[in-house]
Length: 228
Image (cartoon, rainbow, N blue to C red; front, side, top):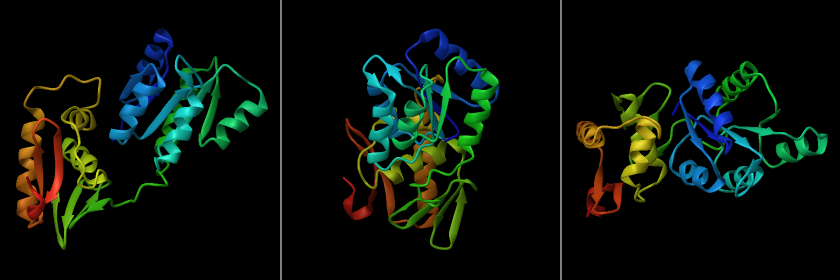
């Protein structure tokens, strides 16, 4: 996913940062609290996150620590009004990758976010897989054995989410957000169309996996014998 998560409760600042990032070609989802951001970070594979330390439900460092403890390697830029050395050290030791003190030039924030997006998330495999399939995100390919097939960007993000949940159910809304972000309008049947295409591609590759609709809950990758 080429989107970033911005965790900032100051509406005006969040709007300015989002505008600057999107003008630079970086789609951005905005979250006003730790809890709303955490729900999204668990489901979506963001390229980076920008986190304010002062949030209504706690210190932004809490989100960073929680993410690292859960094995999420999403690169993180911390925003803060604090300028003390020990605050910067505390943020970096908690798992943040960079630190920016308010007020800051938007050009500098955009440059730092770009630099973070170029870093691989160290805790993520380069070719994530589950069962008999593997994904090559940089090439937009799905592989099964020696066979490969091209995936559209939305299809890739949907399958990445399903693969990383390793057979567990993923909510419909989470798959839509993975494919198209939280800010873009999604047509009612867009996910159904993408899932139909992915099912056909899995069959074309001869995979034992299929995308199963867990009624009322969401979707999961399951082997034929596990399908319900």
